[in-house]
Amino acid sequence: MKKLLFLLLSISTLSFAQPKPVKIFISVDMEGIGGIGTPAMVSSSGKDYATGRKLMTEEVNTVVKAIFQTGPATILVNDSHGDMQNLLHTELDPRVEYIQSNIKPLGMVQGLDASFDGVIFIGYHAMAGAENGFLAHTGSGVVKGLWLNGTEVGEGGLNTFFAGSIGVPVILTKW
Ligand SMILES: [Zn+2]
Image (cartoon, rainbow, N blue to C red; front, side):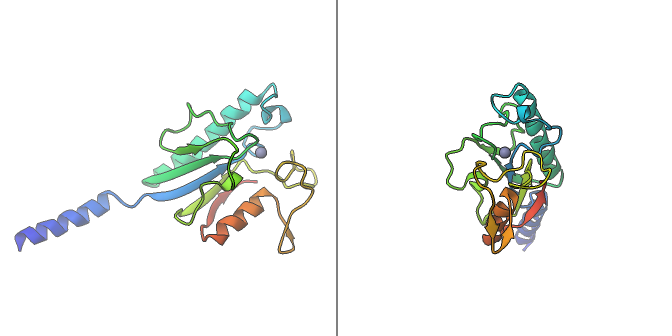
């Protein structure tokens, strides 16, 4: 009887010590990152692209750090801008898993499935045609407008729709 009690206590202690990690998906675009204010910062041929990459990486790290401050987490970061090779992986928080390059059927939401607890979109930007929107566009830029069930949306709206369709809530957005 004593042994059984000890075993039960051990299990309950273990579950308190190691709560189930929250599983978060982060899709990161570039135009909406804090501190980015010129096209030269978001184009790989731009003179200030190095600054843009650094700002983008730092913003992801800030969000990742905040998530880990709440407890254990499993985080997948999907690079979602241009050729999708923008983040400085050598400076990225080593606790995340990182997807880069743009050969992805689901693009900005590649890797997102129903197993995630939440989705975060950072660095997102105004949709195509948005008045006074900084570098406003949708997708490749040739798209002039996109409607979902009669509502005009941009990349953020489209990806939110996808996340919702598989039952994963968007918990933080910035666009
Ligand atoms: Zn972009």
